[in-house]
Image (cartoon, rainbow, N blue to C red):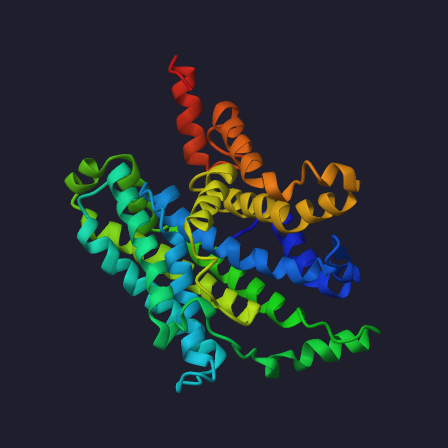
Amino acid sequence: MRFPYWRHLAILLLLIYPFSGLESVAIGALATPIGSQLDKLFFYAILALGLNVCVGYSGLLHLGIAAFFGIGAYIAAILTTPSHPFQMEYFTAVALATVGAAVLGVALGAPTLRLRGDYLALVTLGFGEVVKAYFINLDNITRGAEGLTPIPSPDYLNVPLNWLSEALGQGPASFHLHYYLNLTFLVLAVVVLRNLENSRLGRAWVALREDELALTCMGVSATRVKLSAFAIGCGLAGLAGALYAFSIGSVSPTPFDFNLSAITLCCVILGGLGSIDGVLLGTGLLYGFDRIVSPLVDSAMPEWIKQYFTIGNWRLMIFGLALILMMRFRPEGIIPSKRVQRELHEFDAKGGAA
């Protein structure tokens, strides 16, 4: 499998970034290092890639992806925190969180096989709200609103990174370990999805999105195709949730709400439905703006302006405006998939409306 040269360059830059000295640059008045935020972009990118399987490839409008993100995070936390008896190792917990979210994704998909469009969106939205309520109410397992903490970090993997950092004349950086672990899982997710995209299953997902009846007439089981999309998409969301739990060191129900699902959907639409490169770019733009650019701009504003306006308080409106402009002037996304781009432009060339 061949990648364009710029992908190799991007991976190389990401690999050497922690040792560039730029990771210690502070964000805003809270003096949060940029490096401590970049590793979080990686698991949000995995979450967006999982949603892209359901929405971009298969055309299944999933508005509850945050629930599976939370399920993966809580499974990883329950399996590793001292308050529970399991005390499992990092990779085992991540694997079980991924499989657990995938199984629950199939359990959600099975009763909704006949639903599409708005009806499927409502079911997944309702499921997301129910799951969040369970996170809060199962006090004996999830510790309710207080959450689970601390989630131990696999510090034994940090030895070679600290050695390299000290060899380059830098002190040990706390974000190195999760930065490289999250980046590794992101690269693996991209490789797997690129191979699936060009496989028989990937073509079946696209056929399902375009015409379910035609897919069935070709002898392909629409049921299996839908369940596979739910399993892989929700499994990736569970993987992202597990990485989130280990990176943050604790979990609570607050982050796993509809806002997370909506912003992740915006990442997919902004970057380009069905486009892996587009989804990665969309995630970098939205979450990068939210977590890095917005605090930097707000900290640079004069105090008298902050009394009336801050980017952080208006970020959802900015996201919505960007999405409206994108759907009006470039509906296929910033980096669209070749298939979607060809369909839209061929339709326009024949005299159709955009």
